[in-house]
Length: 166
Picture 1 (spheres, rainbow, N blue to C red):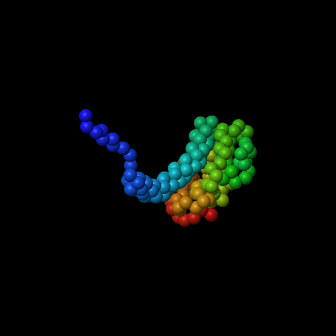
Picture 2 (picture 1 turned 90 degrees about the vertical axis):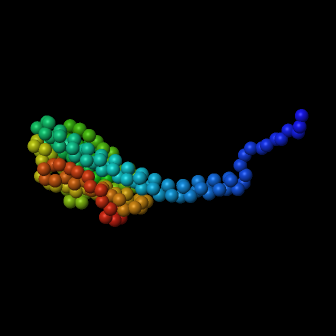
Picture 3 (picture 1 turned 30 degrees about the horizontal axis):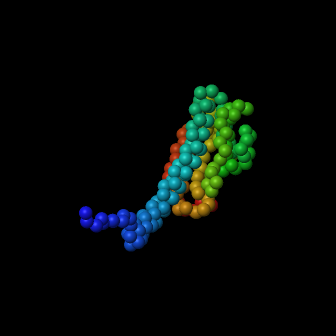
């Protein structure tokens, strides 16, 4: 029998450096895209929470034949505070929904000066409202969502990019 040839398997140092370089380049390209997608998802979820509460208040007013109120709340079942801290949906003294508010770093601002939404038994709220949901810190692009409710009580979300959240 002849001599046995033993071959070692593995990577050379050059192959390892090339593979790590390619991985670093791919990571550098993917991270900003992921951040934008994540921001988009968080803004969509936050604005849909507000939209869902408006739709709940409107449908409960129609279904129950009574006025349903939606107002800012600081985590309890009473009106007061700022919209970013959360909100509550009530029919009289009955609490229908409590929402804890915006995630950390996000801001909800009511732009039309409305402090309380009151849906009548017809589903109409006499005061149109406009809310802006945006990323307050850290700054991550200029995406935001505007949740608008017209005088008929119908609400909708619009994606905008008007600038920095203030």
